[in-house]
Image 1 (tube, one colour):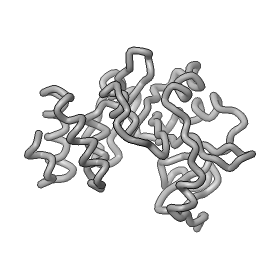
Image 2 (cartoon, one colour):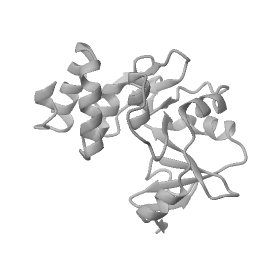
Image 3 (cartoon, helix red, strand yellow):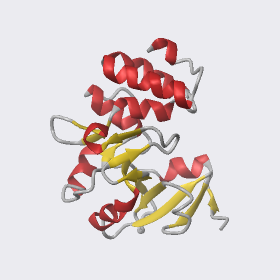
Length: 201
């Protein structure tokens, strides 16, 4: 299916993201191992917000997405990928991003990554040889908000190297500790050999 083409202007205008606190409240009954992902996860790791975020992403095992859906009644979902959008569940097998939409306003509040996994282990969609148990993949703030480990966030940010990704790396990498830096260095050598961050780790 072709889907609806999305322009950058449309996307920016449609997003009214929830905060990590609000998502944690709304998903407090969910037992699936979900976590705040991407840029917001790094803010939670550093315990401070360094820049604005136009959206909010969380990750959940793909087979347990329905638990997230059930915890957020009254909203619609759209599958997003390659600059196009389809009503959920169309194309869900081809694309992992799922945006939550308020059907009354058309605003988007949350982007859910449906992630590969085997039983209780996360599997990296960039390279399935990279895997972690959820007990190591997910960290928690002092108030209990779950978030993705920073070395995993930076591994995904390494692909595109937008200015904000370099800023995030410079801010976070020094605070990660030896073990996390070593993991990220090994993963970058595997997935992005020759990446410029490797020398800084």
